[in-house]
Length: 320
View 1 (cartoon, helix red, strand yellow):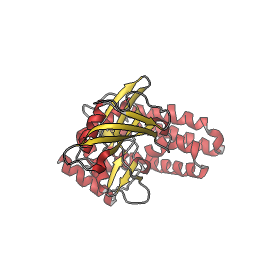
View 2 (tube, helix red, strand yellow):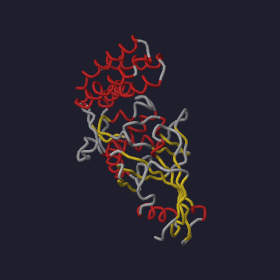
View 3 (cartoon, helix red, strand yellow):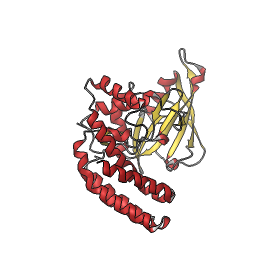
């Protein structure tokens, strides 16, 4: 491919080849054009990681065959990535294209600062008050069902097990509570520390739950909606653990959305769905989710909101 010209809005946090050969091949295949004429690079705005995420617009030229002139421009996202993020999203590619909410991993690589990856850009809106499209739950079901039991998953992926849980509670959450203790009344900080310390002793529940590959951070801010389709973005919390951790932040166990998930799980695995596992998984998720987000809540939310999260964690402890 001949050299292409570049235009940057500003210096980027991601280095290395902007248009690797795999991206050029993908763009030609996707658009039906013959080559990339030039490209522009802009940082994606918003979010805590926007400085390490770029949108690359590929301006194509040389229409071949029956290519539509409207396809002369295509966009991708390049972002800084963790080893477990690359490992997890790479493994999840086995479910594409049937699992339509899983983004395509066009390519990934390493520069002097670490790993990066490139996926197609989706011009959607974040999930808010609207109903999540069915393909989100169908895709999660295919993902969880395919990797049920977590056999042969890469070592780079963190395992949500007893040891991981204790480390999360005692070595991450508790120190973060202490670090931001001046943001809330002493009674709230004392209560938060006591709840987390108690939660750390309940990790044995994880030994009763079957692990699978997780997105790991499914919430409205990581779900893009475009029409009747959803895409799961930001796989930076990808890990191995109980499947319900990917659902409990969005839908209730008795919801229609969960029924979609259950049907898709049974259809894709041809194995009866274990309702008891799902129930215990939801009860565990009700504990893990407020605990793992507690450092961010302590730092950024009001005391009333922190107390509400602690109420949920205490109720979950009682339910276990």
